[in-house]
Length: 317
Image (cartoon, rainbow, N blue to C red):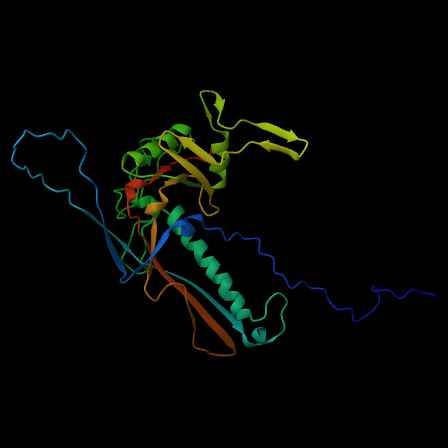
């Protein structure tokens, strides 16, 4: 007698999981670390103050007061940038029974919000863009506020450090060295920073782990094995400790391999325009579909640009 199996049966239900697995990362280390504030206009201004240089301070007994000219504040500005994500779904898709989510609109709102955060992360940390008040307005990015750091060879250079112009990256690129990281960290520390974060892509993270100084690897490659633990191979650097700071390394999937940033987390801020902080709106219907837009209007505000540094002009090796 022929056996009746699922191969020739009709009517077996599909077994489709109600869990949707996302491969793309949602990690945004810079955006998540930065402080947030509310701004009221499309051109945001803030002030930074530097103390007078320390020096010999002694006067004669009974001497009259001597008044030095105070050090003026520096006014910095940046423009808000409008970043949006749109989606449109049919009325039928919203109504049908779906695996992994109830309402498609709610699911898409979550996805587009995550995508917006990723966009802002890449814009601030990876792009070399000066501020612009012309439509579409653009926020100046991290590296355009930087003057401290390493930009060797000499045909690569930082901008003026106020967001008004971009860096010159048209020259010859060079390999990453420990001296470049130390030099950049020292400059940020000397200008009053307390750098504690190093942000880079995966290529430069691997390059840091492979760095050598005076012929000695930064990482001691060793296998640890005891009766109570599984063997582990140690061959990675997660923290750089030099004379000027302890830098926890954060990898970014949104940065290219031509740069890395040394950051004082106390002095990075993102300004959210009042009423435009990830605002979701349903747009007017023009047919049998639902249209939504999520708007985020923001600007980057380094509260002490000299507390940070960058190493630019890297060739990925």
